[in-house]
Amino acid sequence: MKLRRATITRHTNETDISLTLNIDGSGQAEISTGIGFLDHMLTLWAKHGLFDLTVRANGDLHVDEHHTAEDTCICLGRALDEALGERRGIVRTAHSFVPMDEALALIAVDLGGRPYCVVQADFVTPRIGQLGADLIAHLLESIAIHGRLNLHAQVLYGRNDHHKVEALFKALGRALDAATRFDERLAGAVPSTKGVL
Image 1 (tube, rainbow, N blue to C red):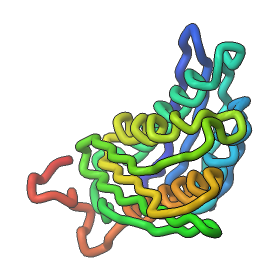
Image 2: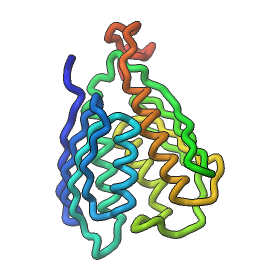
Image 3: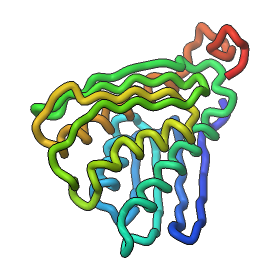
Image 4: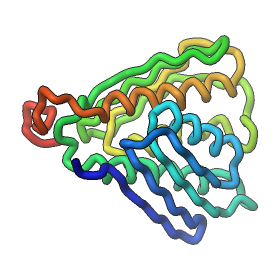
């Protein structure tokens, strides 16, 4: 079986990022972006999705966290797309509900190659650690666009913003784990009536 692994680098005047993703991993993560809360969320994502993820990001954090966080998620989406290749034999669609104390989140994904993102989540604090709460939807959108996937994210309820976002990233990991698995009944076929994704 071909290794579903990709390494993406991104060098701009704002960021310098190297990211390696192994879809068929065991949940090992080594994350260093300079943004503690983002590191925490990506570590959770990898652990609950059973993905191996290594991220080394240096960015213009003296400006703010936007460019570093955005470019990291662009790289994550690109790595996911590259590692999946033609997406033959995969389950393709999946969803996951994840509770985190008082919060409950839903993520539904379709790896059919059509990027789209809908996020329904309200936050009461402007910042969660070093990450602006207004960036959460944008980061999910960046993963969806560059990963060529349809992603619907919803926080059904909750009080604590940290718990809401944590539930979202855990659910994203679990949904992508389920969607990227192979279905033996497909016998390596593309999971689409079009014959191509």
